[in-house]
Image 1 (tube, rainbow, N blue to C red):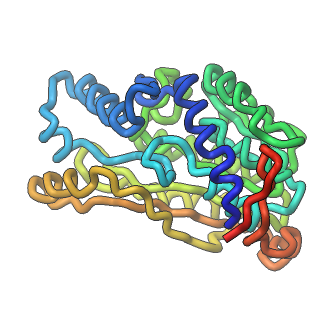
Image 2 (spheres, rainbow, N blue to C red; image 1 turned 135 degrees about the horizontal axis):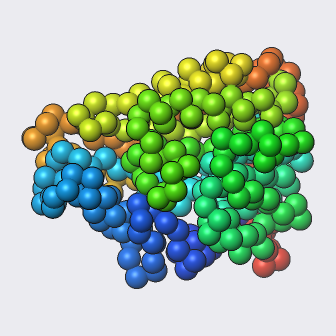
Image 3 (cartoon, rainbow, N blue to C red; image 1 turned 60 degrees about the vertical axis):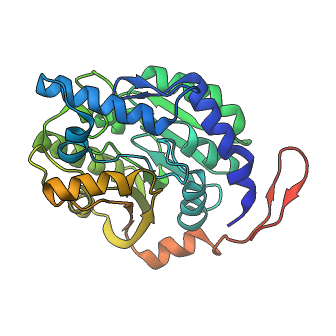
Length: 315
C-alpha cells in the first residue's frame, strides 16, 4: 500500500477533526484530551444518565463498557484513511462514484477525492457536514459531496446517483449516541434500530449499479443484559434481502489500547471476552466477475504523489 495517502493527510485529518470538534456521546473531541479518554467518559456519563445513578469506574468497565473505537490504527474515533484507500482501490472502478449512507467525519470523502473517485455521503448532523466541508480542501480535483439529511431518505437525497461502490461504517446501534435527534438511529431500541437499518441498506443498494461491490465496516455490541446483538449477522441478512450477496469477510484488527486492563475486570466479573477486531464485509450486487472487470487491474504498490511536490515510494 502506498505510504503517501496515510502520511500526507491522515494526520492532517485527525488534527483538523479534533480542532473543529466531533460529537461523540454528547462530548466533543478536543486537542487537550485523547479521543479514547473523551469517548470513555462520555459513555460512562451516558450510561449513568440511562440508569439514573452514578457508576464507579470498575462497575462501568465490568458491566457496561464495550469499546466502540472506529477502525483506526491510532485508537481514536476517526476513520482509518488507509482502510479507505484499500477499499476504494480494490473495489471501486477508477473515476467511479462512492455512496456512503452514514458519512460521519470527512475521512472517507477526502480519501475518495484524492484517489480520483467521486464521493456522496449522507450525514444527519448539519454541524458535522459543515466540519467536513472545512476539510474538503485536503481532497483532490473531484470535491467530495456531503448531503445533510436522514439516510432513511437516501433515495430522494441522492436521487440520480448511480454508485459504483457502497462504502460505510454505520452506527453500532446505541454504543455511540451521536446526537439527541430522534431521527438518529443510535437513539432507537434494538429492534427498531434493525428495522430502520435494513430499510437504509435496501434503499442504498437500490442506488448501486449492477455488477458492483459494497464494503461495510461493522463490529458487534452487547445489549443491556450483556448479550451480543449480532450486528454483523443482521447486516448480512439486510444486504442479502436487498439483493447484494455476501462475498468476502475480512477481519480488521484494531488498536489494543486499554483492552488488557478492561478485559481482566470484565472477565473476572462476568466472563466477557474482549474484542480487538471488527468485520469488513464485502457484498456484490450482480456478477462478481463482471464487478471485478469493472474495477480493472488491482491497484497496489503504486506511488502516491506528495502535495509538497515530492513522491513517496510504495512499500
